Image 1 (spheres, protein in one colour):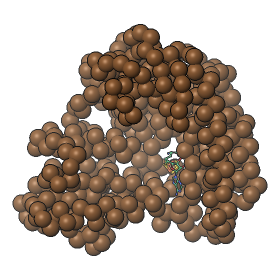
Image 2 (spheres, helix red, strand yellow):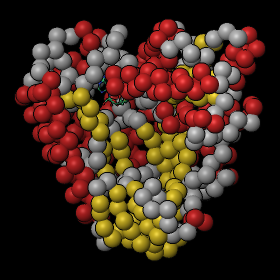
Image 3 (cartoon, protein in one colour):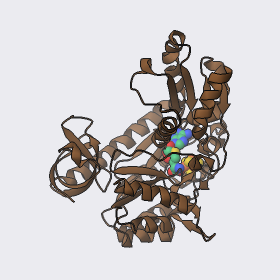
Amino acid sequence: MNEYDSDKIADVLRASEGVVLTDKAEDADIILFNTCSIREKAEEKVFSDLGRVRPLKLAKPDLIIGVGGCVASQEGATIFRRAPYVDVIFGPQTLHRLPELISARRASGKTQMDISFPEIEKFDSLPTPQITTGSAYVSIMEGCSKFCTFCVVPYTRGDELSRPLADVMRDIRGLVAQGVGEITLLGQNVNAYAGEHDDGETVDLAYLIRTISALDGVQRVRYVTSHPREMTPRLIELYGDTPKLANHLHLPVQSGSDRVLAAMQRGYTALEYKSIIRKIRALRPDISITSDFIVGFPGETESDFEATMKLIEDVGFDASFSFLYSPRPGTPAAEMLDEVPYEAKMARLKRLKTRIDELENAVAQAMVGTVQRVVVEGISKKEQTDMAGRTDNNRVVNFVGSADLLGRFVEVTITAVSMHTLRGELVRTV
Ligand code: SAH
Ligand code: SF4
């Protein structure tokens, strides 16, 4: 979501003032930090990063320094107090107003801040993105109204709000016309999508995916991040009859303990979660399921944690994310009694990560020798001579290939596995 927003920030400034990106902070006339406040560590990082650019501002007083994203949304004017050299503060829903905020700052000499939630206006004001890979994100809904007790998102990004179907489809047709073959639908709770149809009816994510899959140029559709509570029978059905839907589902579970899930207010039990997975696997036996886990939620006991480890075995997750619980100011969980020692939480996290890594590696090993259809996303991060692509089950594969493959779908034989990436050999373009 943050990466998507950062791309939009660049698009908006390029369209309005011809601003171009630079890798060197010393060359910049505008330095913007797009921040995350999902965990404390991410939040503190912005203040150390701000400290690093302060000398640049002293050397070049015209330099504009801005802070956007969820830390801006949460902290607001406090940022001006902690870092008085900041010029502009904007929220996740007001990034389209950046050009005005920057020119107001330049014209008036006064700091500018806008962290409001102006409904869906943001999308109407966004310029057409320039896509350089074969895969593109399309944000279809914003915000979250679930209020899990640990989470800051509903406060920083505001309520769930879906874009009208026609707007989403216009964006997607534009991308397909540019040669984009893989579309990833994006939202905090993407499967809560409820977009308005031209006829006034409301359509769901299943309808949207069917509509997109019917477009000739589209080869693959993904969606992220989805909530177990919104895995409707209509959405599950797609895994049986929509081959363009990627063979991967990221479905955050957080915990395998019903007691902890209830305290988190997730709205499902471990059994209900497993039942969703069982229904999907009945239609797509080889689908890769990844998840998010929070370890050390207030009051989590050893047996709660064992229940999470058991769920991991029962489901057989692929590569997943796991986090140490981080109390977020203003959330209900931050007020809960938390007597579990830090060391115990860390030991649990380590155990969980080790097991997930083993499972991830086993999936990768099983892929060796198979032919995978990948969309070529760019030049490999490891070797400049290699290209990198993404498999149906969301793995990165590096292989020898020329830059003109960018954006194409190709077939690659998997030849080897290293840490989190695969190595392959180009078979043919498809
Ligand atoms: N809407 C998605 C997740 C969005 S946040 C969902 O509900 O599944 C991404 C992930 O960050 C969450 O799945 C959770 O695992 C983690 N996270 C959120 N708040 C956290 C906190 N306070 N401490 C630790 N991890 C957290
Ligand atoms: Fe946060 Fe996801 Fe829960 Fe919303 S559904 S409150 S984004 S964890």
